[in-house]
Image 1: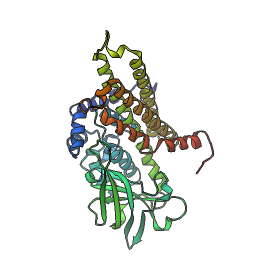
Image 2 (image 1 turned 180 degrees about the vertical axis):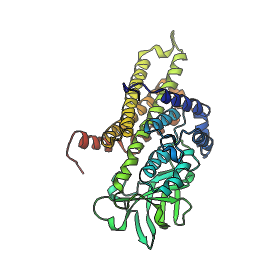
Image 3 (image 1 turned 90 degrees about the horizontal axis):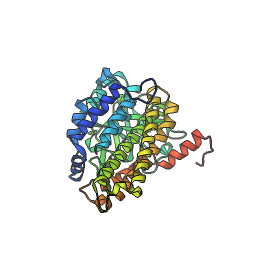
Image 4 (image 1 turned 45 degrees about the vertical axis):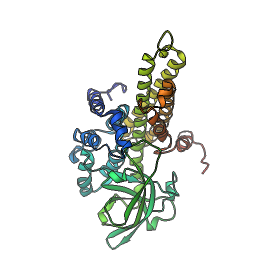
Length: 388
């Protein structure tokens, strides 16, 4: 940001325009068509990678743009505002790219980061387990040493985009750390590794990126599959989770903007009585309120990204959680009001709002539920006792 903190620099404004222009060439029609055909948005992903958008936050020496989470959140927001909220943007460059660039060995950085940056490698992220959910201390995926190798066993659920990934960053724990507090260990697992399998979860989401259950049965990995330290990875894990929340907020802000734009365009031209229906305060006021809420959420997202890029991880955690909460709530309300504003047309395929109804709810649930965000704020910001 420039000195006063609220005006985006020329570079950031140019990035916003460039991403918006590229995404507009694809748009929501392309995104939904691919999703309904069970296909991936490969063309969009590849073009975004070639133009340097996917890896804008990654170090220049490994093929990235050398910028920060602020810039990556611009990419995510503008893609979502154009109707193309690519979920793997949250995962591949934001979580995995961040963790590997901060904690990986030189060899790991050279192997994975250039591909993540240009989009030729997509890396999924596997933390959630059937019996753990938000309680990551209950992770049971276990890695044990066998000579110089690691052997991993476990199960993961709701893992995005495994079928379009070349590798997955798996959060497990070493055998020695099975008891006590979570001491996660992070492993890069190529998706073609023997013993690594997955099954698709049927979702009522219209998305080109699917959700999977993942099984790791005696998955054998070389010693260099471990990212960072095997017993100090809690810091490594959280280094990736703040970007995840910022990107979740960016996606929700973009979706909120899209819904408001669609509703405004419709109520401006739809005329039943003497004036367009957008003149009626029963429609204009809720849409104005939606716009205010989305802009407020965006401001908190920008604060979170700025704090993160300045290295204030504690401040960024509070702001990122708040931004994700605010953006999810604003987006859900904006999509709901867009449907209401369009009436029956709001539920047709033609206008593209109905598909966003389910998708907007995702922001309230993932990457962390709003209830867990409220727990975090109650305990961390307000100093209230834990109930669990």
